[in-house]
Length: 256
Image 1 (cartoon, rainbow, N blue to C red):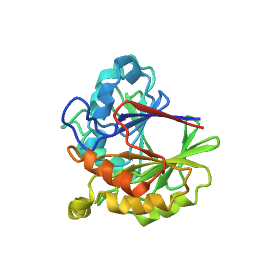
Image 2: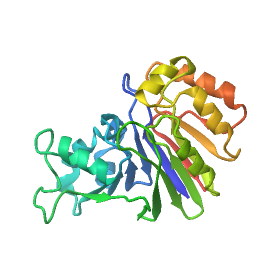
Image 3: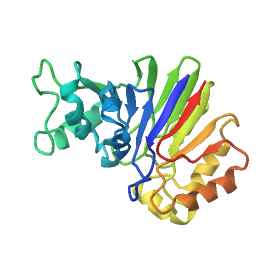
């Protein structure tokens, strides 16, 4: 079974109900560390042993430094931050660089740090019994999605990406796929903006989801503030009776 909690699933902030990307798998592992991380209690934050990142944009990493600062003194072991080598380099250079924020890989010492980086290569890695396999993404910077497998269940996460054919080809070859967590930032009327920012729009997403097996749930995330209802209406009209889910922060799903 995979227990997925969407602590943050919006494409921006504004109002108490919008939180940016942060997904919990169980209570010890999160994917991305956007503002959705702020909805967790201190006790919940202290339990997080692993943070898996899709890319280094602020809406996906903004609360990682703040979490580390809040929990470091209460933990006996470092938090492990997993990402591609390219994303790790970006975080070392531009975020945890002792200028924007302290480098917690050296505090209190390099032998016993509060956090450590671990690279995920193309073959994937087992984290707490969940196998993370990187999936292609197209977002203009180093980025990826993930296929997360556990026992006989699997969920695909697109991360932030435009209409990446290689991602959709990869997940159609997964026989035990339960769900795809996929971004849709813009409605059909804003295709130019979607293309410019390298995000997904409803027209392309409807085509991709309709090509998936009927038993695969589609969990739509990263809808931009103020466009949520328009995107939802377009997807409902184009996807018929498919298992379409339009979550709010805090939504929890069980697969398996």
